[in-house]
Length: 141
Image (tube, rainbow, N blue to C red; front, top):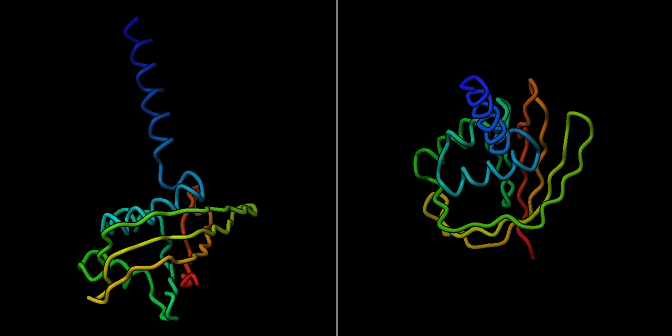
């Protein structure tokens, strides 16, 4: 009886972990990225981006993984409130394009950010996990 109870607990914990795994799907990966931005948590972001990750901001500036993590971990990117809406995912085997809108309020290097941003993310499957390889922001009109 104890073995059955232990096995049941193990299976429930495994199912719960799978549901909260930030790399389980392209949607999970994208949501984890934005949650990491909101929480100013570079650890979360680092788990869901590739080593060669690139972000293109709405002003055309590009940043790589190291610069993004330095900005988030160093307090240069401060997001007070943010929501992700209108997610659309198109999957092509081990690659996916995720689009949507991100309504954010905060500051980047002391410059106020309060806008609705349209984004496009490229997610890829790496060693069985979904990771974000590229993110591009465009200011919504």
